Length: 225
Image 1: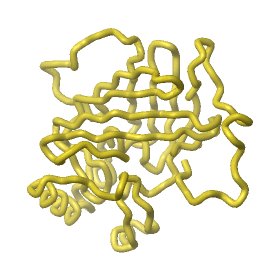
Image 2: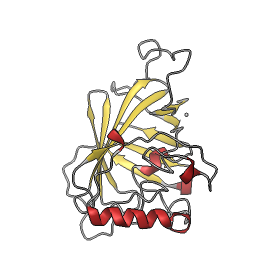
Image 3: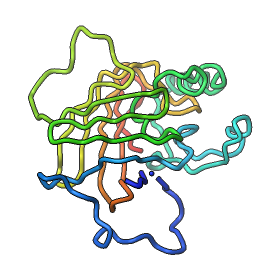
Image 4: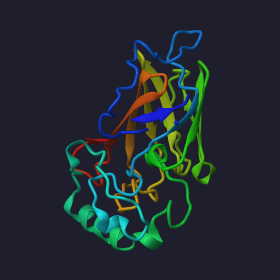
């Protein structure tokens, strides 16, 4: 979940429940869509490990243990890919593209990096500016039918196409550079990665974020954060 001030706290239920969506609704644009414009941040430890993790991972960086964001806490790696993930983990202090090399984090990791990001929205396009590595992406809402870019190299932040399903923004992302990781624990993908993101408003200060991951080169089936 993303939290904003229009800034995420996927945490245990607070003692005093936050206002219900009906009492604190997400603003809307002139065309009636939820207005996600503002500053947001995911307040969790998924950037270090998208699965449940103890202090064994966190000790070097001083990050506390945390709950994972993977549905069922299981990533369905193919056997050879699982071995590569273990190698990545062993070399994470020097090989993590984001934390060790300060390269662009890719999608979906950019969303749950421990830094804020800004959403700028209009009817035809959504722009997202991330504090980490000054990453930028645009989400095309035009609905124009076009092929995925061919003959171009893959992009660190991918090629994003968005559409509305009711109040949920659904973003189809492909053409992602295979060098990015999902987290500091070495979870990775290939150039075949396809991500479908879902941004659903809870209230004016919270967005429910989901990402479905598909990569037949690395995983045996699609899985979800």
